[in-house]
Amino acid sequence: MKISKEDVLNTAELARLEFDDETLSKFARQLGDILVHIDELAELDTKDVEPTSHVLELSIPFRKDEVNQLITAEDALRNAPGKENDFFTVPKVIEDQS
Image 1 (cartoon, rainbow, N blue to C red):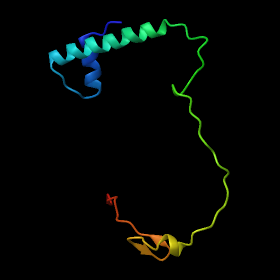
Image 2: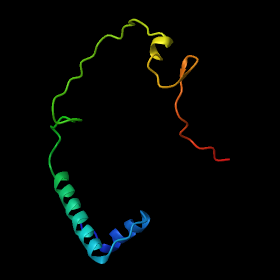
Image 3: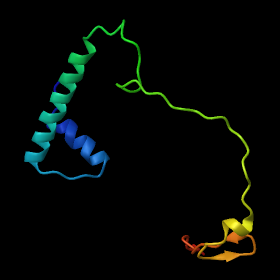
């Protein structure tokens, strides 16, 4: 599939990007090459290929979800840099807009 400089320019404008003519031509050529490769991949017969999410066989070891020793608020806050009552305190990161 051929991508024109105008297609790239239109997409760049939508993304609020600016490119010179040389870069537009380069991107048009590269995007065209990518689409040609995708068309080639689409021609492959994959009906007997199992869908995968990863190329390697992976297994995730699971363990039983068991209740263990509970931690008290005092233990949790022991090394906290800031605390108030039974809570951690952190610096404010959101400014008031009023």
